[in-house]
Length: 157
Image 1 (spheres, rainbow, N blue to C red):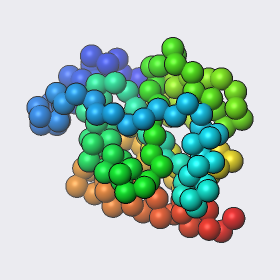
Image 2 (image 1 turned 180 degrees about the vertical axis):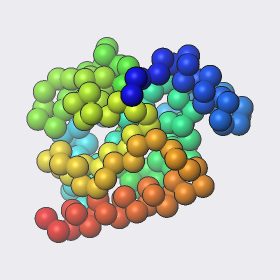
Image 3 (image 1 turned 60 degrees about the vertical axis):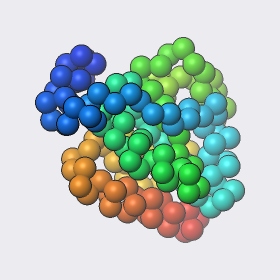
Image 4 (image 1 turned 90 degrees about the horizontal axis):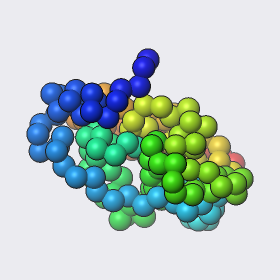
């Protein structure tokens, strides 16, 4: 599937979502300086590292950030984000090598946004990734289930 340009994606998303969501400014979810360190901190608390792969201006990414990951982060979830277009800022990968959001997204084969990934401290995916938002009504349940599976996988190690 060909990736949509930002403009084309925004037009399509605007046709599907309400204007209030489609026009909302991106809310902040932190970008990790180091995936290795972020996953180590999560692992020390027996939690997965949750990573949102997002695109600036993506209303679905904003929905996932604002309605799910930010509130869960305030409750202790180790949730972070990377930007599929960011080539300027350094993010160190799980091996400690300098990278960027764009390169990491490509390495994770996360070409569709939003994609939510669940990692162990070693950088292993612990649960099936959530790709896109098929149904906003059920997304919270899908996310809760994936987090539960990731936590269970951590407990089995």
